[in-house]
Length: 562
Image (cartoon, rainbow, N blue to C red; front, side, top):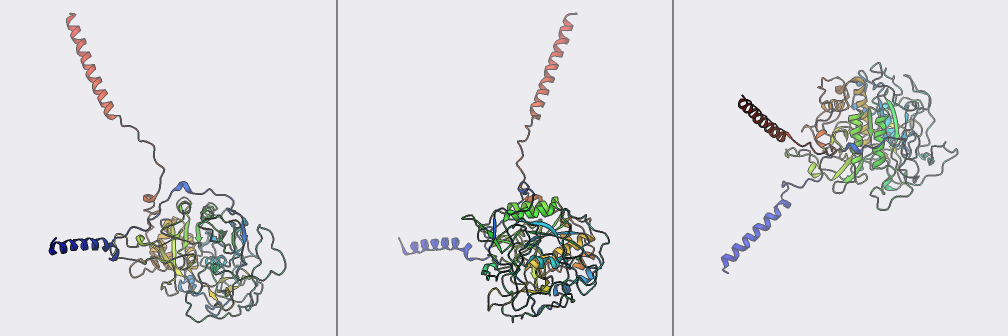
């Protein structure tokens, strides 16, 4: 073979090799879709029933404690309250009568936070116990009564919804009518916070006496608010004495006249007694896909018009768990029961939540980048039926650890959080160190962002009771402060604006998500009836010809007989 022929052959081989390599080295080359937008199978809606665990549970960690640190100052209005202009929003709505179900770690009621029991998927109790010191903080952001400033009058003047089914609200004494509430018990010393005693396995009275000293929780059992400090390079806020009982503080819920329903579905203090070998959820604490789906259906069936979900299941897009029951549950709640479902987007680094791509406006075929999703955030990714909330600071800037995704629809403050302590009912804003020598952990995360949005959803539902759940979400999203590109995967359509959501002239929009029907999995139809039109025409024609021939024969015979 000549030298030129050899060179020519080598050139062709090199070109072929480069062509095969190009899709892997050129970033703009089309990639296989990592995850499709989910479909819904209505046949998988779980039946409602009495809340109970799906397997025996045991308490494996002591209950969490809360403390007060210097910032944010719990004696001043909460930064998120000020950033969202909640005081102005109360001139138009206070969420009067709107039932808000909170699905998470349970809520401890207090004079400033009356709560209705909704059930318990951990121990089978009533849902009015918060061993994780998480959901009580979330409930405070939604509906806690202010202290030190007047309670706003109920707005609108009549309840927007009938009272939800179930037992009456529970509180430690009557809720405050407008002034100072009854004093609460003094908090434990700050230098040695006393944890709550371990819960019994059944809903029985707590044993009396001093609880044993808690064991330090494992690293994976950090509070569900967020994985540590979102700003570890900042100086640590020292613990400070809390305000005196009954003293004015800055804790106030967005919708103080809403009706809170507590459903306990998850807890980091509990785990299955006998985890199933090879179960992909065995490493997680109490709370499963099945119980979350059941809790959503239960909340909808007992009359909740807003359902707040801070439980985020982060799953690899390459090997996700079966989430179809959760999808069916949120579809049922949103479309059949007309409930606004609000879910936290999740926090990067928590329970395997790897960050997703942000936003590619140049990709017109897939601008929100569903093609490159790494982590599925459930139930947020059922975006047709769920308002997924990311976290921003109090100026509206995105928090880096807020989990991005094409399902994120809006954002709200997720730092500078304060709420009511599950132990004392007083204002708190941080968790103590998990171990000696570690930092205090301020409250932060998308859980609290979702709480703010849930409160605003209650305000909108009370002011506009004729709007459907999807139309309420549309109003909140349309009046948010859009980011420069209009929408992105960190903040969705931007930081919410409660006053705008209550006052702007916004077209109602579709009563249900327009894309929902196209992703509905319907049962297969039976065989179509056979088309007999051709046969019938042929038979009719043959009949007509036969009738004509017969008539002609009769006429001929009649003529011959004459």
